Amino acid sequence: MTQAILQSDPKANYLAHKREIDEAVQQTLDSGWYILGTQVSAFEQEFTDYLGARHCAGVANGTDALNLALRAVGIGAGDYVITVAHTAVATVAAVEMAGAFPLLVDIDPTTFTINPEAIEEAIKAHRDQLRIRAIIPVHLYGHPADMRAICDIARRYDLKVVEDCAQAHGATIKGVKAGTFGDAAAFSFYPTKNLGALGDGGAVVTNDLEVAERVRLLREYGWRVRYVSDVAGFNSRLDELQAAILRVKLKYLDEENAGRREIARTYNERLTSPSLRLPECLGEVEHVYHQYVVRCEDRDRLRDYLREQGVGALIHYPVPVHLQPAYRNRAAVHRGVLQETELAARQVLSLPMHPQLSREQVKRVCEVINGWS
Ligand SMILES: Cc1ncc(COP(=O)(O)O)c(C=O)c1O
Image (cartoon, rainbow, N blue to C red):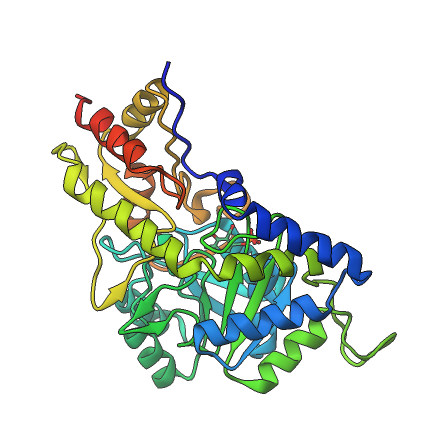
């Protein structure tokens, strides 16, 4: 029996860098300093340099990064933040963690990212009743949102922009990295991400020194001086072990993103089933294929068939946030329905995609799918 093909494989990624990671971990263990130390500050500097941004503050995870970024740019109780429902629930949860309310709008059906026209429509429709203060574009699956249009709307309506970069480490628009367009950006280093730790981790990136300093305060009880809180803060620290691991993996991010693009090229060339709609790039973007997502009207049957054939495939995401039990009748939804979002949730399927996937495995996935009827 052929071995199952995993949809993502953080262990394979660890094994690919095992010697360097083990060494970095051992050095950190030997150092005797385990939270917010030299590994964290070195990683913050290296990630800042990689992105071409000015400041980076490591935090405990991507959800916290969004929460603290929102707070640091001045979003708080009673404010409304425009974002999408076709995302990880974390995006919306973080808005509420910051004391704000989500106002959910529809996506562009090609890129699966926030539709700028829907943003402007929602602002015009709701600005007399709701205090709309910010936009969170999510660079979903590794395809950057339309940041030119989004930043233009933000300027015209005086809104803050916090980019959700949890799935877009290294993605670019006209050569400029996602995470450097808005007032701040939030990254997740969850193990399956393009840049993944071996545990939880996150970071806020910004070009604004004041925003960075506020995040640094908020991530550790509001301390400027130890044990004295200047502002009421949280515990959201990145630990030294994760930072040391991230420093190793950051060196390989571009190479691994190129590997993901190569896999996507092979899928594009070899997947011939007329029942599938393949992903597309819009504009001068460099996609980093956190996920390779196809659309299929008979998606659930295709997923079951792939499972029987030993091919892992996942649905990102099966239930849009505004239709999930916790958020139904709670999150504000522009126009009440999100047509493209709801259609996407019924059709999307994420095929195996990770840098250690072999060419033979990719070909096998294509053969299996092309043989489906
Ligand atoms: C789009 C998006 N936003 C936010 C998050 C939250 O990140 P974390 O799981 O590190 O809290 C994730 C990852 O799960 C994500 O995919």
